[in-house]
Image (tube, rainbow, N blue to C red):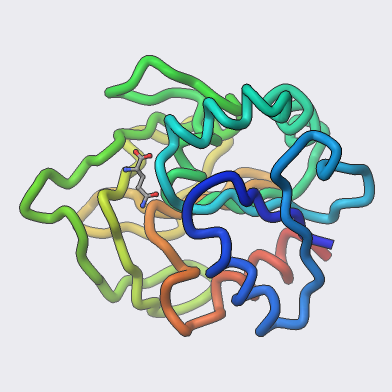
Length: 187
Ligand code: GLN
């Protein structure tokens, strides 16, 4: 059973991906939805500051942080990467304090607000990545490993049981990155 954060952002699209892959899921909106027995967690794209505040208001921030620390597999996309990061270079917030990376928000400037790029993704192959006001990873800690780069910027990482992308695999019909998460992290 995969929990999908459904507080804000592109959670429906993640649910459609999971449905396509035949993986059961449930929406997490409040503390009481975040029960034992989850096999993984998805943090969707959206607006990280809004999501972080909602997590805090709902009393979810600490329990989720603890669960991730305890090894719950997690997959964050875009704003989800920002929520997972231990360091943000252009924002004073730190939310889940989990992934040993420094992330820059809205990192591509105005001209490149949104774009699509075909990029090689380790373990998956070439992937059509959709970026929307995306972050990138400026610095990797020793535990974190880059899975994809675009223009010399790291745009996907894994660290132990955590997977994060700066782009939105839920916004393309290509299910391979979700499949990769379920196969390599959850089972
Ligand atoms: N710009 C958003 C943020 O900083 C992330 C964008 C996204 O999730 N598509 O939170």
